[in-house]
Image: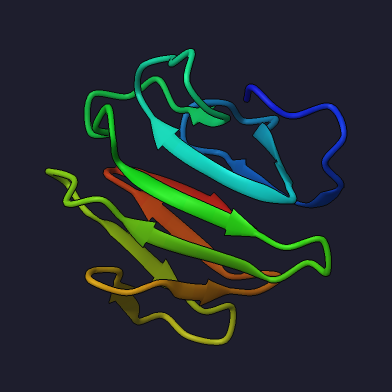
Length: 113
């Protein structure tokens, strides 16, 4: 994850899809592009997977710890599963709030918040 050095850490995205010990990305206050390709223009979360689009989703996090995600018309979509549910909500058209213990799916990759 490329990040602004001054922004506050408000959480983590952790995936066990490809690493049994966990692939961890910090979530810092600010606006983050979820992408499969590095970019020089803004902060981003890089996920090396063919199901993640170059402009897949946006994560917005406030200094107070509020986290939201918005799909950017990605080919394989973005979904949120609440920590107390097995049903996934497809994220399309508006920001979805995400809380501690919820899961976010970017393409075929799943991350716990």
